[in-house]
Image 1 (tube, rainbow, N blue to C red):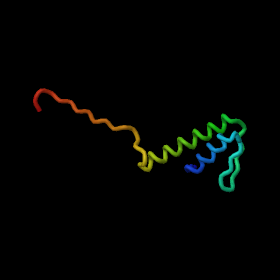
Image 2: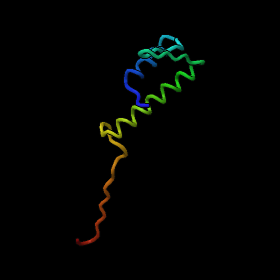
Image 3: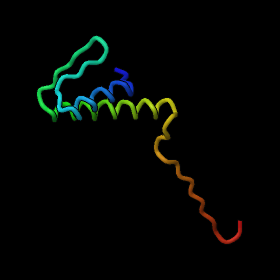
Image 4: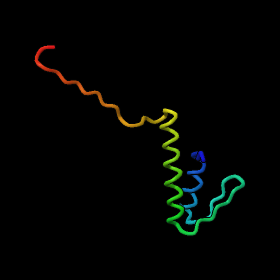
Length: 73
C-alpha cells in the first residue's frame, strides 16, 4: 500500500494524544498497544522513504568514484 504524509500525520497525532484509535478518511483502526502504534508509524515512515528513493526525490546509496594514479599517466 502506498502511504502518504497524511497517513503518517494521523498516526503521529494519535500517538501524541495517547489514543490507540486512528481514523483516516472512512477507515478506522484501533491498535492494541502503543508499541503496535509505534510499529505502524515505523512501517509508514519506511514506505514513504522507499517511495521517495524510487521516484528520485531522495538520493539512494551514495556513489563513490575512486581515482588511482601511478607515476606518470
